Amino acid sequence: MEVSFSEKFFGCFFEWDVVCASRRELESADVILTQAAGRLADKRPGKGNMILAHVLRRLHAVFPEKPMMPQEEVAWAAPDLPYYKVITAPGKDLPKGHSTRLWNTDVVVGAQAAECRKNGWTKAIYLTLPGHHWRTALCMKHYGLTPYGMRVPATDYSDPENIFFSLRHAYPFLFLVREFVCRILFLITGKI
Image (cartoon, rainbow, N blue to C red; front, side, top):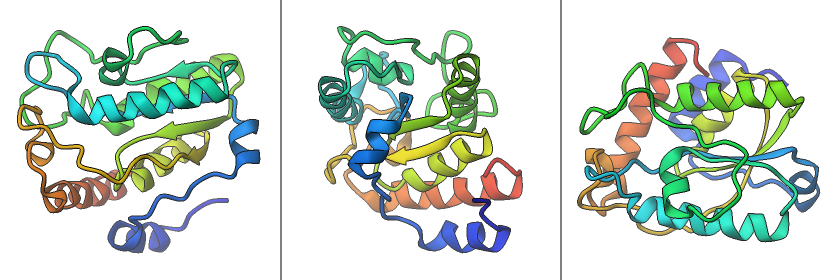
C-alpha cells in the first residue's frame, strides 16, 4: 500500500516505534537485511553493530535457510556467519562524522534491493537501530521491497569512538534529532 506524502510528513514527527513483523511474516520473508550503527574510526564495528550482529545471529539460528545481506559493519561484528553478500562502502574511507550522498540509508537499501531483484526476493526482514526503523522501511518500500521489521534490544547503542557524533554519546536525543533531520531530507528528496 502506498503511503501518502502527508502520512510520511506526519510520520517524520511521530513514527518512532518499531512495527514488528508477525512470526508468519518472518517465515515468509526471502532474505534478511541489516543497516549498521556507524563504525569506529579504526574500522572496528563498535557496540551498536555488536548488538545488531547478536540479533542477526539469533535470526540465522531460527531461519538458517534465509540469505543474509548485512551492511559491512554488522558483518565485521559477526564474521563467521554465512552471508550471501556484504554491502560495503564505496572507496576506502568514509568521512568522519556524517553520511554522504555516496553512503547513506538510501544507498545501502538500494544496493540490497538490487541484489534482491536479481534473485526474485521481494520480502525482507530488516534489522536496524531503534528509531531508524521507519525511514529504513520506507526506503525499502521505495525500492519495491516488503519490509518486515524485527525488534532489537532497546538499549544504548552509543560508542565514544563512533564516527557519527550522534552515536558517540549515550543520549538518544542526539540520535533522534539527527534521524528527524534525515527523515525530512529523505522526504523532500523523494527517497521515502
